[in-house]
Length: 137
Image (cartoon, rainbow, N blue to C red; front, side, top):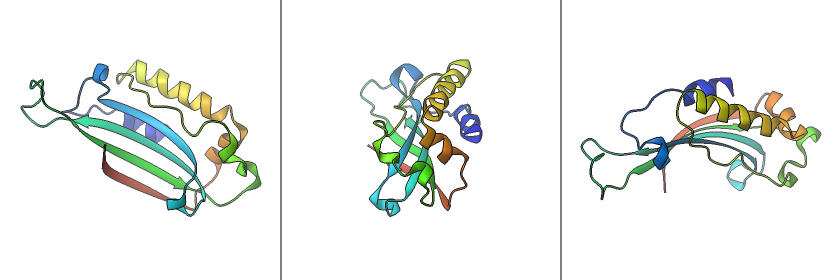
């Protein structure tokens, strides 16, 4: 998560401001059919991108893009009940880059490691990983 934290602090030009949810992050976990129901941990940064000259246009609608690091793990008794935690993500956070984002990332990390299953998953070596860039909603 340290590398993800550094990535979240990189300023990106051409996005909506923080008060308009222009740049946010979320961590997600679970078992999903598109990963063969294997235990998965995902770190995602979502950006609301506006084209050059469109930032001042009140009718402009941004495009939403996500950069995701997906980590897929082998089965292990330490996280066998991963889907029964009651939470499947940290929720999106759109804190501004800098100290506010550092604090928000720390909150997300503390939330995740408060669950023994996620703490164990966090320390494990993934079977595979993917880095994806995709347009979302």
